[in-house]
Length: 191
Image 1 (tube, rainbow, N blue to C red):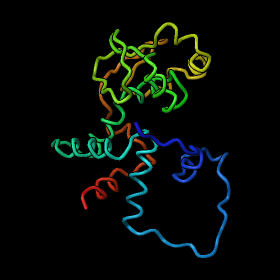
Image 2: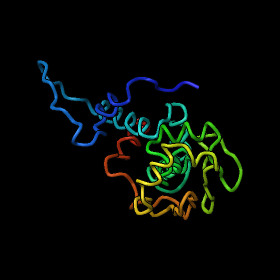
Image 3: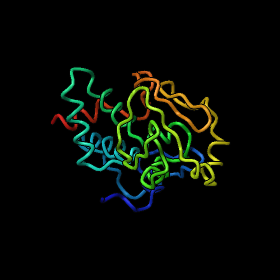
């Protein structure tokens, strides 16, 4: 499967996703050109794709499914992205990044309701139990992350106790990211 393998920090800097301590002053070069409305919408879509590690075809499919529902399209889109198995493993605090969680899922180190699942885009449902395999608990990065990441950082729609996570419900509108403007993404695909 194709995926972005280039410099991650460069993309994080482009989308302003780095912590303030890592942000440098921008170097000015000649004229600054304003972005068009289309450019602003495109960048917001690219930013969301980058955050969740999803390619265009899959992202468009998520959007089209969200658009078919009678509910708020933006909320349904975010629910689909948040309910991906790789994201749930990351949000439960088992691993430090979504990319690491994706690799961990691909290698078959995650169990959902006792079954081995190795598909990062697997859609977890309410009531599912997500656990790590026993051998995965001895991996240094997992041990370190479990020690550092206490259960208070876990979102309200997930419950974590030790190395077991449970999906309590679905993402609510209050839990949406502040740095993403979903409306711009909806406008981009509605043109």
